[in-house]
Image (cartoon, rainbow, N blue to C red; front, side, top):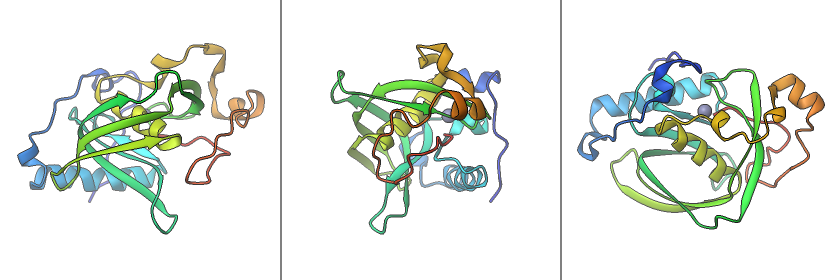
Length: 191
Ligand code: ZN
């Protein structure tokens, strides 16, 4: 396994529309190695998600966390060629987002709070599931990466885009403290 170099904002790979992966190749060595390396890279940088273009691979593959497993530990989903359907356009959730490709920065973004996701998993099986709250936000952030979109594109009020330290000190990170499954509400995580 290897820790991969992370592309930072300004690198053109982050603005590419990523190519779908042939479902027949998901269980092959190339895709499986990319999945393992992305997990190792995400763990190294304490990310809650990571998309393939962030490691210079413009393909539709991402890891998304924010959910808890049966024992209350973190659960990460691998999604390939995802399609997202918003379940309620009027139900929005806002939070300060961070991104491993924009180190040290946080910005306030509002997104739909509940979504349905259709994607292939790491075994090449098609899955469909719904997500609500924080995991839905993480998933949308990762899926945006696969379309060349960064969270900064979705910030409506640029006075709420700041360095982490200043955001924590002056912009009150807790003012929209939502309840999520991980119990991790008091800080932003990078995806
Ligand atoms: Zn990101």
